Image (cartoon, rainbow, N blue to C red; front, side, top):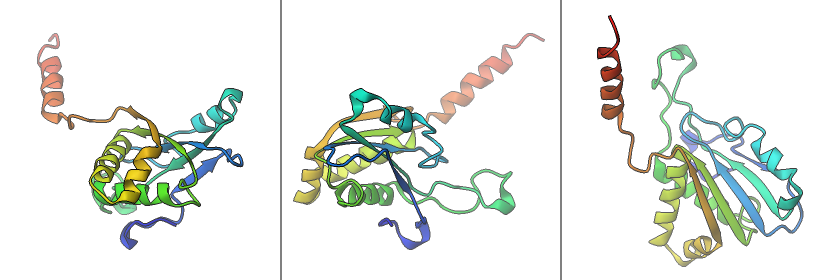
Length: 173
């Protein structure tokens, strides 16, 4: 089980998909905010694992606690359990990618992040650039980073609200 602080621990937060012996390459999927390590990616990793041209790859769906709601208040978003910080999630991912039982045995890593998962990947890489030698070794294993819908420039909520307001104001009456 992971390195997350106790209040953020989960019974299981990763799944290896179609593990083959002695593969040197692993594709690691990291979900976004309000996502789940298995539900976010659906059958996508399984479909990739069935592709004969990708037999040299293993697949890991990795996750972190991201439930922001308490069942009693499930209709009111953003109440309840706090999420772990970006730093603690990226540190946990870094530790798991060095752990031989999870991702540490792979020579090549391909990292795929959706939304906040992409921010987790970027934070892990930036932190590793300034850390100990073992983190630099992890960086040497990263071959590709793929980001989907990652808010690299932050979330521009005021702009979104202004755009919506313009549409509403300009609706025919």
